[in-house]
Image (tube, rainbow, N blue to C red; front, side):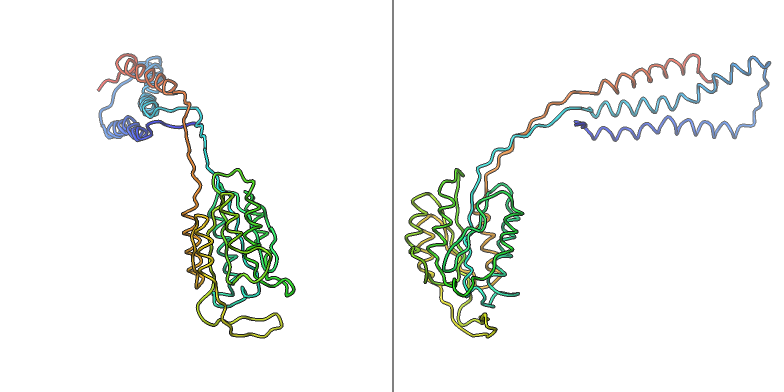
Length: 328
């Protein structure tokens, strides 16, 4: 790796134009002269011409010397910068409700599940050093993707998520939490978190939600719960093509109790923007600690530029006062 320790000195390269500019002005002034000089023989003419040619190079040598000196002052260095990164990783499981009620169209632009998937995808894109996994639940729960750093594979799994088929429709919140906690139980991460997203009341499964939350607390897993859905009746399209207006209540008291028992928080999202804001808050709450220690090993190269500059300056100074001296 090459760098300049004091790069602002490179601006002094502009001074290299001074000797050349002076020579151009001198030549221009000489061309306007009307005084003629006689020559004494061909041999003298040849000797004077060789010196004149050498004298013409003098300003360019001075300019090069100034440029080299400016580079030397900027302290060119060659070496490498070494970085040591220390992280306190977080393992996160998103437990997503895929029951039929997530078809409700109170979340623009489509439905609750569509907006939830899009918001989760944005959350994933904002992480860089955390393992994230995905669990879905309806009447049954399943792991769609275990905790991973392969975010592309995770987003592919998320994109394939759709509504539960009719025989499996239901809301087994307890089962969803238990599956997520089981995936984190053996994790060695500094922090382990479940983000539960649901729009209903537990009505299926053999595990009570509060029992599942207690299991999370017992193994040191923190849970944030998000209740999804607007107030009052909402439009829900049915698999047979019909559309109905129904009210879909959420047991907020239970979700809040579950989250707080594990050291987490409960949030209510009544529209798409509120859900996005909640994930932004969780993203800020659950940040991986990253410490970067960097140090460099560099060799100074200024002598490679300073020595030639001094040689050129010295030669130019001596030459301009001896062999290359000009008569006014």
